[in-house]
Image (tube, rainbow, N blue to C red; front, side, top):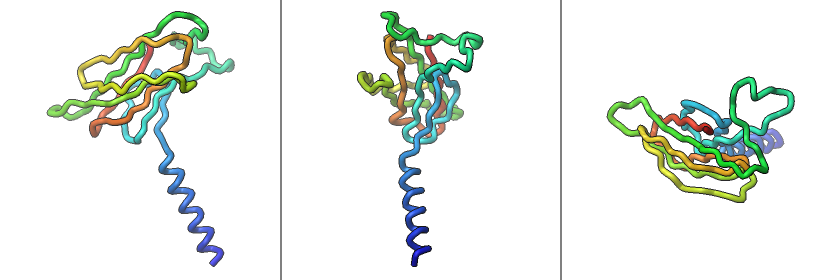
Amino acid sequence: MKKLFISSLIIFVAVFIANKLSAQNPIPSFNVPIIVDPTIFEEVVPSSSFNFNSLNLSLPQLGSREERKLHVTTVDDVYLSTAWVTIEVYSLDGAITYGSFTVYEGTLFEISLSSDSLWGVSVIGASPGSRMSVWFD
C-alpha cells in the first residue's frame, strides 16, 4: 500500500510539472520550432563571466531613453500553407504587455521598445509546423 501511494504521488507530481512546462528561448533566437504552448523568448541578462561584445550583439542600456526595435518572423516547410503565430510582447518586470499580434509568413513584425526594460515574447497560438525568429535591431 505504501508503494502504491508513493508511486501515485510521483506520477501526480510528474503530470503536474509537465503541465507547467514551457519552451524558453533567449533573444536573439532564429528558426525555433514552436512545439510547446506557450513558447517563450526572453532577453538574457548578461553575466560578468561572458563577453557578449565579442559576439557583436546589442545589449540593452537600462536607464536610457533610447528605443530598440524587436523583430519577429515566422516560416514553415509547407508550400501550400502560410505560417502564422500570435504573440504578446511583455516587459520582464511584468509592468507592460503589448498585444496580441498575429505575424504571418512573409511579413516582418517590428515594434519599438524602450531600452529601460528587458523584454520577452510569448507565443499564444501558432500554425502547425511553424518556426519563429526573434531579435533586436
